[in-house]
Image (cartoon, rainbow, N blue to C red):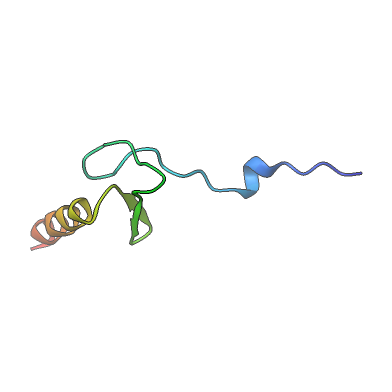
Length: 55
C-alpha cells in the first residue's frame, strides 16, 4: 500500500482579502481573476486601483 502526500496536490486557500485584508469566510468568498476577495466592492476597488496605476 502506497501513501500519498495530499499537501502537495491541494492548493491552499488564502485566509485574507487581498484588498482590505479582512478574514475570508467560507460563505463570503468572491473569486475573480485568480484571486479571492471578501466582497464585490473590494474586487471593484482593486480593479479601479489597477486601472489608475496603468494610466
